[in-house]
Amino acid sequence: GIGGAADGASPSAIDASCAHILTGHSGYVLSLCIVGDVLFTGGQDGSVLIWDLNNLQYIGTLPGHKGFVRCLKASYARKMLCSGSQDKTVKVWSLESFSCSKTLRGHSREVHAIVLCEAAALIISGGDDKTIRVWCMNKLLPLVVLDTAHNSGIFCLDALPGDNVVSGSRDRSIKVWTTSSWGSVRTLHPPHYDSVTAFAVIDEGQRFFSASRDKSIKSWETADLQASSHMLHAHDDWIFSLVAAPAERLLFSGSKDTTVKVWDYNLRHKGDLQGHTGAVSSLCAFNGFLFSASHDKTVRVWR
Image (cartoon, rainbow, N blue to C red; front, top):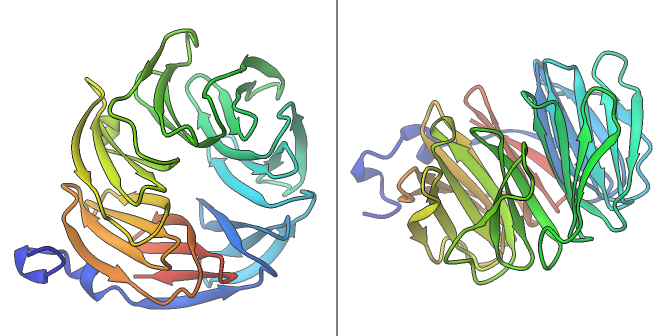
């Protein structure tokens, strides 16, 4: 049955236990990113903390943002980390020197989402100003501005195959853009009933999941952009985060209800990870470990 281990549920999902708790942020932890053997965590305090994944020790801070650090994305190939903030900027950091290479300015309100398109060498950011901004990864200069990409703020971005990017908004809609010709955009139907907050892309981009403040998770086929399944009441409150663990073929969702829920790729409920005392804002999966960031000022490490 749903949530029971009888239907071949992954033991790792049901038996997952919290192996470690990282403390160091003075406020909400809002974003996570892993590159190589380093974990970056972004917080309400405006700082990005750096952790060594080998021993889970704190190793430093990237200072500079003057507002919540909402999103983090890294390119291992380019030794680059990008952070988006409430201060309306995207900062680009060198992973070799841990210094800020450039501050990208242009958004007129807070930056909620970043996606890196390596093949096309693009940094793409989405913000509360309803715009999607495209930056050149090589020269760190602006290339394209989509002025009214959505009718309201943009909360999430992800990359799909074929130079496509998917965006989710407070306006409840999901759109798919082509980075080679930004004019061609497709809107997915039916929309969610509330803000779209997170994506997780699976199976080499053939499918992706969307999560929403409407407490539901949807599965979409990339080829025809049709919804293939819909878990209506996935959580008791807004869903803020999604991540897939491809090796285990599991999906994890984090919510304002303080839980992380575990699903198989058919959206069958496999278990809950409980322990946070605040909303779960961000999730990251790596090498059989799951990292969850929360408004309770901690990052939990599960395995």
